[in-house]
Image (cartoon, rainbow, N blue to C red; front, side):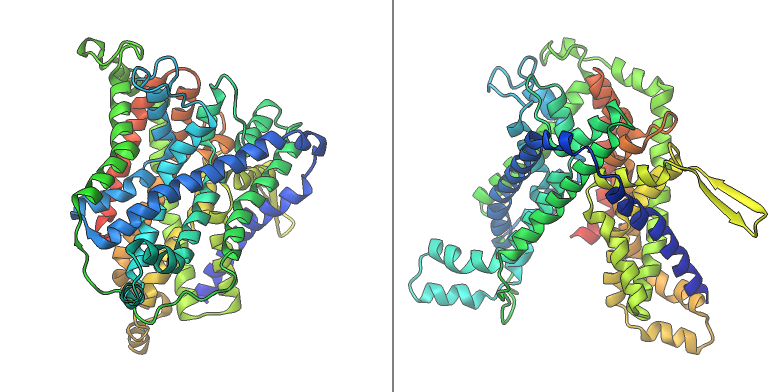
Length: 530
């Protein structure tokens, strides 16, 4: 009975904040003539997405193959995930300081212009490469080594074995990683906005045009924003589906997996990994640190140009302090709520499967695949009017979520619910049901068995899932920028505002704070990641 009531409440919430918002998008479509004029934005979105995929594959496939055959020190291999863990708009701030065509630190050495489509591709490709690296590394470990050995016995060179045997067998993993990269790049907002808004020739993409349509004319621009969001959804969902179709239903299974231990990494592989981490993490973080201490961004790297005034300014800003506290509270609440709901759904699907439970689980996972801009727009539409509930024709309850912290909390929770759901399901699959059955036979209720037996055994996985939700919610930008109200500024929107309105040193202070929090979170999850 208790489980049924809880599932009913989850179903109601998912219906109100997933089905209804996405369903309302179809009713608000309009502005077709204006949408047709956004062809350049759609084309730039495809170029940006395709470029990020190619760069991520170009970096990730060779490094993934190398890591599968060469064992790096544990700390260095764990650091591979750092480029993805650090929010991309944080590293964007660093590359703006490095590649600004007038004041960039690298300007004396290289004629860079980070305010360009290639700059957007560079930042996003570095950010998303870890998914390809780790995906390829793990896929190689699952390959049957006898296949490559047979090709070598037949006289094939190492290059031909790689081309004709290894890479075809890796194609499912490579295409899966490419699909994720394409979805993430198409949905990206912070990177293209920061690198396009200040460009001499702006490079609009669909996410930035949706934001501008709502920012300049919230009511008049809404039909255009909805139409563009559906186009963005098509790109974000269509490209991964197109990549999957290229497999053509072929089988790529091996008779046995590769259980051989990898030899120590060669100096060449170690150097390549260090160079990648330097470009993706070391150089950006060092640049952010310098920017936060620079009195004058054009004053060079001298000690005379260093000051702590920006740190003092940021620490004394009441607006920043409030935004930081809101972000901490919202992230902690979203992590706690999603772990609770995700565990309930996972336990129901694994221990008492039904079509209803399976449908709820699929619905809970759907928002993670939907671009944040699209989800935010749907929530704007569904919460623009007050919700009135009449109880027994006497009591009227009015709920208004627009421009509130509750809306941000719901948005974060809905978007990230898939993470603890999948984590809890994976942990439950390794936990034999007889443990709970024994507790029930001994007289424990369903809730008692869950509380006293299952949850303690799931605790390590659930702690990791909590951190994995907390980190992106703490520094979330896309949902926050579109859903914030006058009194609901959070850390991501505060950082976004400082950089957009000409306070890059203060933005660097907050960016460095975000980086430290992310690094601390990764230390907490490291045992699970390795």
